[in-house]
Image (cartoon, rainbow, N blue to C red; front, side, top):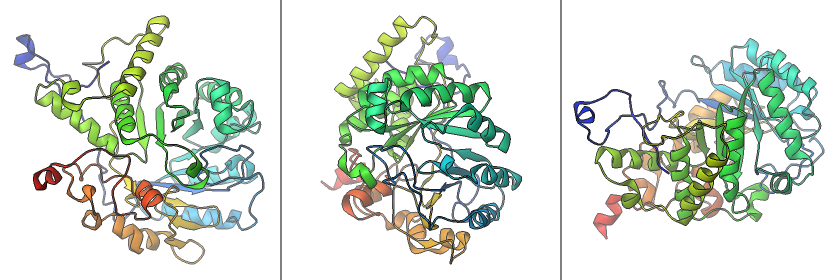
Amino acid sequence: MEKLSESPTTTDSEQAGDLPQRRYTSTRQVKFDLNLRPFIVIWELTQACELACKHCRASASPERNPNELSTSEGKNLLDQISEFGLPKPVVVLTGGDPLIRPDIFEFIKYSRDLGLATAIAPSGTPRLTRNALSKIKKSGATSISLSIDGATPEVHDGFRGVEGSFETTVKAARVAKELELRLQFNTSLTKLNVTELSKIAILAHELKVVTWSLFLLVPTGRGVQLNGLNSEEVEDVFHFCVDLSSFLPIKVTEAPHFRRVLKMRQEAIYERRDWKQFLKPGKLYEKLSSDFEQLLRINDTIEFTDFALSDVKRPPLVINAGNGFMFVSAQGDVCPSGFLPKVAGNVRSTPLADIYRNSTIFTDLRNPAKLNGRCSVCEYLDICGGSRSRSFGITGDYEGDDPSCNHIPKASLSRS
């Protein structure tokens, strides 16, 4: 299976029957200074949740913490996010399960009244009813993200720890589409469910998601007990995602080296090289590709035949933890990411903008000169930089290598 594309302009060489040399955008850059404002702010309204997910970053439990930001403190936080200025950051209201908070719809409306693009990430529990989804829509949410970690109840419910979660989530996804809410699927990648990706892709296509977001496991919270993919398997998944990126709008979270893989595939096209011979995908890539092609053959309602010449639906945005991205916990602690739990300050005592612009960890993460190891000399540093969260989670050093990346930079090879 193969896909990549560029602009639809036909060149003289194409008219002459040569291999197409189409141009496509492999990444997107924000058009403002990330030192001044983030692109996105994730606010964890609560850590309470009725699910018991194996990977849960928050190690959620059913009961709310009495020290959560109050309604007035939450509105003040939204005010501070709005005060970053134009373009205003995107706000994602998450948890735990944000629907557990009775003021959730008040927060959505307040955020939208401030002019903030506002999304919500609820859990697949019985709270996720048609009435709740209708209130989410009426309150002004621009989109909703739902977690699908398997293509069957057995796999998904086993991952989420509660029977019936798959059925509830898929039903909610269909209702969300009826209500014309923009729908995103989130899938956490581990060895437990990686072979489900082809089936989940078909389901995501059926439900017409605007984005399928794959979360590459970071060992934090309950996730420390799970086995993540090794670096070769990660590379295979990335190649599969590149192939699928004309079939589905895909993003990969805590995996900036996906941008490096996409760029390398682009370079292979520019150089008229067979990318498979050049980049040598492994057995997992072949399995995922074979599974997907088989599913396409038996599903005659899906038209998708040309990987090679179709466009990348969603070029990845060049932002990383602390660099365009920030996280606020239920108790007001501010971190570069929910997966990098190193506290830079608390909104109860320090203005959010001051934490983002001036705290040591945030300024470090926006300074590539602070990196060490392979990442510091990588030729793709400008579009990648490695997952700072995974580096921290595995090595305790947020400036070190990302262990899930197997790329050897040219500078390292020249010194060896």
